[in-house]
Length: 539
Image (cartoon, rainbow, N blue to C red; front, side):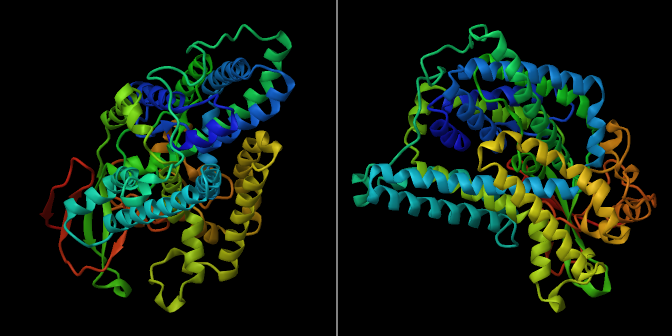
């Protein structure tokens, strides 16, 4: 819903609330029932928003019908997705490491922040008072939403309270500040609100079937290069979202199926084009947040001498199922009904801008680039002794972060121009940059600490191998690191499925350090329906 607003403005009302909601429902239903990995949340992303309004800016001045042209882009892209699946092209995801994922995640986070600012810039249409009130509301949503997330990850209050704040703090903030505009003298200020249309109908005067035959043959074939760019974007974006949702910090038991999932994504892309809705794909940061909410964690005392007395939370296992993805999709479908659309129409655009800010900052907080920057600026004497980055030269860390920031800046800059249509190619080039160039300037030991495989060897079995098979990776280091992060009874050097793991390199809300002095282990059921915890004895 929040991504739709800027799309609505930039495409002259071509995509509205119902289009974005229906796209999210389509992705959720198809992937919850049929996907090999249903933990990956599928919906309308920031990058596809950039793609859609860039296509609109290119074709509409030339008299090309937008919906028909987008439909052919999606249909050609569907065939390209099928070709990727049939030829096992997803085997290449084993080369994707945190380097590429962190740059892309950093980019997505800044897209959220940028769109929030752009939404606020539109509020002066309603007057100075409305604009300043909208800015105030957006900042209040940001502060309350972020505060609830922080409290949920802290050691304050009891576990059920923390889980409630982390899972429902931001939605409750949206509800509260939707009504906040009616307090006192503020109710006399007319704010810009979320524009909605008739229940279960498109925003513009058209049906849900695009007349894709009402377009010239030349324009049909003109859509092919655009479809190629869309396919590249979805190939990277969806696979990265899927990899991160199955990251090394999550001890999953059920295998992945990248080839089948990219085939399903082709089907949803084709359906989206025919229906005239934005094509859904894997969402960042919602996909990893979904897996995090399903983690069952254990509190364990750190045995290392330099960290004696500290406890850490490790992920014991993940509740892998299809219900939560389907449930959120059906709930979204319910918001397309008349009564709930009336409620959505009450939401001020300032609240949506605040939601953009919350999502952007949360994505930045968990990003590997942010973690490295904090390490570089932290007092070395206060850095905990087991920090893997301490094994690297400080100059190597600075150089690695600088390369990541250059990659992010170049990606972000190109999307601010009409050349944004080609930014998927630039993003895809991050993979060979990491695989072929970085090993020439960093030692294997440094890359072992600065970078990491996105998913475990178990997850990557379906793509023909793990990270250790990639050129430039260190076959000796990767298993050792997996061994140190595995809390299983075996002494095997690789991560087995279902092993409990802790995150040593990339901070996550599922795995965090605390300072509680406790010699016992705790099992914590993390999630809105799993609030019990029980004491266990350590083996």
